[in-house]
Image (tube, rainbow, N blue to C red; front, side, top):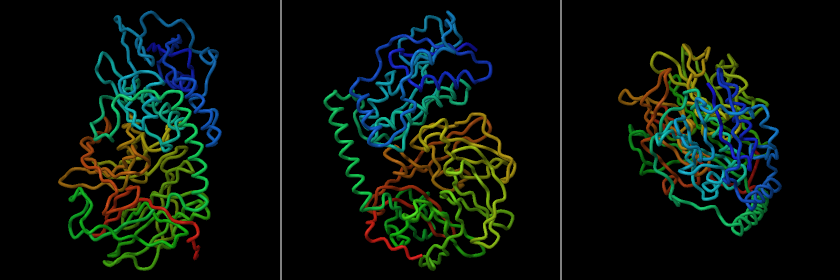
Length: 499
């Protein structure tokens, strides 16, 4: 298969080189770089903003936005064939003229300026690959660095590479389901040089304020909410309960997040991420729960040299198992409790050499499935959903042939256990369009097999009067008790490390 990639030679970046490398690595694909001026680059004032952000935020100077010289295209500069099998048009100026052309656009415009304009306008960019007006594949691009233009730009360039490669391999197909979009201008314009200069000044001022803030506050400081369902949980209510939520108390020196309860031998035990502000690292802790709340406080059950979170616990074969998030170790590991709720022993490494977030297992259609978002070639941690399947939860796990099965900052990242209601599989998801973990979605999985995964997000819940704070992030239930989490703030001068 001969693939010609139309590039703007006036704004050649590492992004383009990585895209060419990834395409050239596909079996049976020969790649040609059609690099000519296109006039779609970002203004010099935006480049100045990038340089300022690199300095004040300590960003990597060798990211995907790094400028490259034409020599970087040497392996791909052979004369493109007159009629390649496919043209991938990043500039929006290729006429089909009997050729198969894929136009890569952000919202409705091509080029890096179109992407940066959406970022500066605070919108969630929709990347679309079109052929003759029809949608080949779509992705909602995301970042964990909202407010930092360069970091956001580079994250979204990385995921554009993922989308194009997935479309060429046939993994990504069709349009995304429509979601309610945050309010904003539908046709943003690139800010003027003066406004970009003001933005740079504000970025510097904001960084100074952040430094002062971090001297005074723990940021963020998460909290866990709980309640008795009385037979109606959030999957039934699709709204916060009128009674609100009670909070799991902490001592201010730590926060609790990622609540995972389990009913085992008649007792509900809650597992949480236990983040100690002083060390800047999380362990996993557990606390038994009764009808009126926690019995004591969370006590450590698993402490490793690297950060742990999302303690996905489940019972199988009369024993309790856990798959904690350990992306800091680039593994997904399976543990077994030998002295519940502690005594955790690693039984297997399910996945290795991978930055996978919030691994979530479910048994469906006679197979086990593992859902996780993967930081594929850089980019965000929350917008690229990958699947694996296995005959048993212990493995061996096989990657889905259509990975990433979904690129969507609004609904890719898991937010807790999946449940079956009325014969249908429901999946809690994180809506990170506004920021990481900002809202909680409930999605109905309409298709899941080796041909692909499809879902429809039916409900989006946000913080409010009944759950105050800035985030709503996880949903789990066991034994008639339901748990969520979100973030708040905590003054450092009130910290007391009582352990």
